[in-house]
Length: 321
Image 1 (cartoon, rainbow, N blue to C red):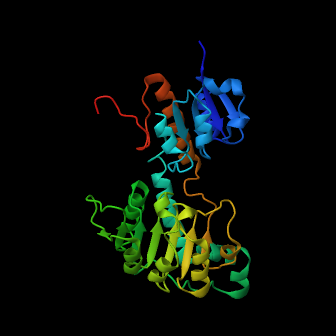
Image 2: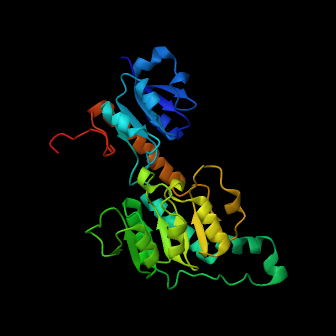
Image 3: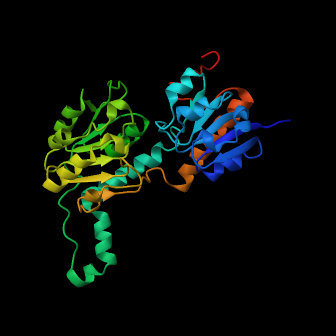
C-alpha cells in the first residue's frame, strides 16, 4: 500500500521523524520553499511539518495538502489565513510547554532582579576571593507589583507561580477573564502605569507589533523591569535600549528578539539587561513532548480524520461537538 507523503520543511526535532518515519513517506527540504521540491512530488504531498513556518507560496504549490503540523505553540510563521481558505488544517503544540516556559519566566525574572548570572561570574572569575563580596543587588522581588501582558495558558501559569511569592498580580488582555481574581487593566498603558514589573507573553499578531515602546516603558518608572518571553516583535528594541541606558527603567530580561538569532549590540553591552537565546521551552523533556504532539496530530489525522490540537482559525469541527 502506498504511504502518505509528508514534507518536512527545514530542521525538525528528530523525535518527530522517528515517530512518523515508518507510517509515512518523508520528503525533506532545507527551508519552506516549493522550488526545492521535485515537481513530480508536489501533488503527492498531503502534509507539511515545520518549525520555521509555512508561507502561502508553499501552501499553494501543494494541491492535495490536508494538514500543516507546526512545531511550537506560536504559529505566526504559518499563513493560517491561506490554509483556512483552502480548508487545510493547521495544528500547533499548546499546553505541553506551558510549565517549562512559566518556570523559565520566573527564573529570568529573578536573574534580572537579583543579578544572579553576574554574581556567578564574580565567583568564577575569582573576584570574590580577590575583591570581596559581590555588590548588593539594587532590586528585589520583594515589594514589587507584577503586570502580565497576555493571560493565556502560559500567562496564567506564570501568574500562579508568582502567587507563591506574595506579590500582587495584574493583567491586560483584550477581554477580562472571569476565572481569576487578578486586577484587570483595560489597556497596556494603564497596566504599565499601575505596576513596576511588566511580563510580556503575547503572540505575534499585527495588533502586538512594538506595543511595548518608549511611552509604555516610561510608565513603569525608574525602578521598572520588563520581562519578555513572548515574541521579540512586541518590543521596540531601540526604545528599550534607550530606556535602559538612560535609567527610564531599571532592568530588562529577554528571551526573545526581533531578528533572532541577531541581538542588538546596544542590548549586549548593557549590564542591566539579562539576555537568553530563546530557551524558555528548551529542555529535553519538553521538546520531546512537543515532538510527540506534532507526530500524534499527523498520525491521528490520517488514521482517524481528526487532529488533536487544531488552531482556531482553521475549519475543523469535531463530530457531535
